[in-house]
Amino acid sequence: MRVGLVGCGQIGRMYAEHLAASGDVALTCHDVRAGQAAALAAQVDGEACDDVERLLDGAEAVVVTSSTESHDALVALALERKLPTFCEKPLTLDLHRTRELGLAADHGGTPLWIGFQRHFDAGFSALHDRIADGDLGTVYTVRMFSHDAAWPPLERLAASGSIFRDLMLHDFDMVRWLTGREVSGVAAIGDVLAVPELVELHDYDAVAATLGVEGGGVAVLTAGRHSPLGYDVRIEVLGSRDCLTVGLDDRTPMRQVTEHGPDRRPRHRDYRDRFAAAYRAQIDAFLAAARGGEPDPRAGTWRDSYAALALAMAAERSVRTRSFEPPVEATP
Image (cartoon, rainbow, N blue to C red; front, side):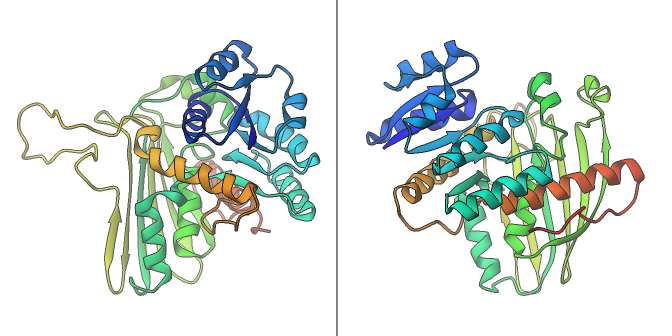
């Protein structure tokens, strides 16, 4: 299968290496940094293309892992060609454009997946199924933690919108996906403690949000840009019948207060380490669907991206107004 990869950064490289190892994908790579595309293409025995429209014309499916602000134009070009399209989250940082692109994909019958890889993580997926099957009974509370080991480059933080639209977007998505319910509103607070430069960007590096879940229940989320022991993504769901957790294991970056001496246990380094298997499962499922297979029910959709973005925007308003903010618009 001929796959066009647009964006040869960390996630793009991870996908390219995995697809090249599969042996049944011919990759063509494009990046605004032509040298980076050429280097990756050489590594995975693919081709480099300096013209994105020419790349799309020769592809049977496209994987977009470029910077967030480029998603809109690239996905629009792919949908014009009715190419099955996988785009890293978020689809766009604008609700109106997210809806326009999503509806264009729907009307054209073109597969459009959004990269919410946690849907494909074995633990999160099993938790989703246990909740859907009623094993936990009535869900009372959801507690979620998402903390980077170290903050990304400032250029990326400046382009991402905010910590709510970037790191925490996964958490907003997970609350909806796990519970199967919409969120009625958000109350959020934030501070700048690790990265002083974020003050000028009107962004934060330590945030918390409390979400009201329609039909009952509360979600409490924390996120941050610096976790000294390693990358930390965990969740705990308490229900009337059971309490289950995902991500609490020997690699969780925390210590018991009674521990003594240096901590030499391996920790999760970053998202690629923590979710490597989920990323592989996600892209494999997308290409299977692009080849005409059945859509995977775990796939992230444009509606998921829309809803998560609406909640991120509500969190941003809440920090400013110090109030409980509903999503600006209901999910289409």
